[in-house]
Length: 171
Image (cartoon, rainbow, N blue to C red; front, side, top):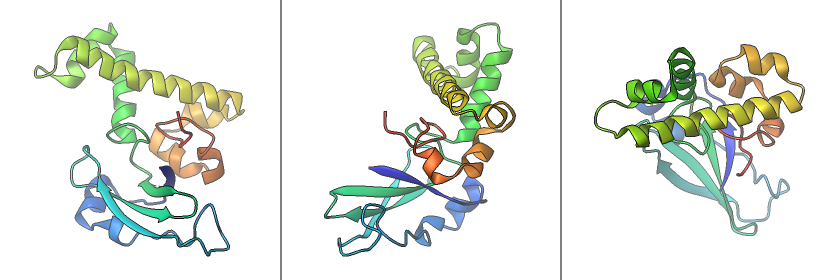
């Protein structure tokens, strides 16, 4: 599956309430811009979190690939939103330890080791993203811009070279 940004200024709630995935369009096959490959809409899939959010996708039979239009507010290759990941990083930075932050973020129904793993996964992807942006000389953007605004500000060809949660580079 290849993820492509769906440029939207809608919030999660508005996107879900208006079922904006229904009106999402991908005008041509990214693999075969001239056409002739049988490129067609391939339904939707639902994200676990946030609830009621569906992602529109297409299929190229010649390239044997699906393409998903991921709204700007969603994290790539992780459940949840970019705003939630940003919040996790902020809570972690202000906490005395990763354990304290994880406990505060995940609550009593999740064991502490599980919560720590969950939080460390998010911290790790943000560090990897920051390092990738530094290597691309995009220092100002990565230091001063929120993750959702960063996704909106970057061109699709840059996003395809960046790792998740903002970019779409495969692992």
